[in-house]
Length: 256
Image (tube, rainbow, N blue to C red; front, side, top):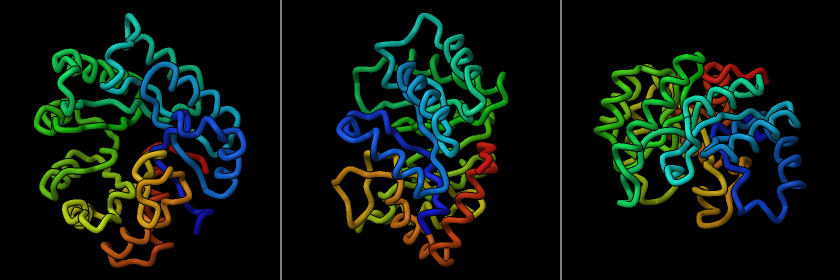
């Protein structure tokens, strides 16, 4: 089962992996089919590019998360384009979007950054990895305007919002939250998404599934999320992993 897993959203540059990254990552990548690093700023994008060049089944996005607002380069548009052109292993622009959860980030600047990153994706013909938190209305309005190919990552919205995302031609990805006992909203959203539009992710080191909730997550734990997703969709766990993996390859153009 592990050998078929593709983790479409991971953060192995996170400080949680500082203690054992050099030994852990090769071990994980020898166990699973592949992984896509989700970048959050320039430093994170460079980590993704450098790591993708080291491992055949590791790919990366480049881009600026809304929480990177305080440390943006002078021209995020040009910087993102230059980063994307550094490697053929760059398969997406992301993680980009809007985050209104905290008051400290200027919403107008977030909107400008989001649009800029969508323009980069459009110019380069790359899919996007979307982060939306407490900003669904504004985010969907922009996505309806740009109609990018891509994925709504770590989906936490309602079944109705999930259907809107699918109508835009996008994919929907779920983390270990799907396995939580109080995850009725996520389960309903997963039910609403056609199986050919579902992706699996960890968002590691965060969002570890049951029975590891609260611990450091890694890509191998996707099997628990896949088991729950399989139950929801009425298929075998291994079939769910394979379907999600093929969906991932189709969206990101992965050669694994």
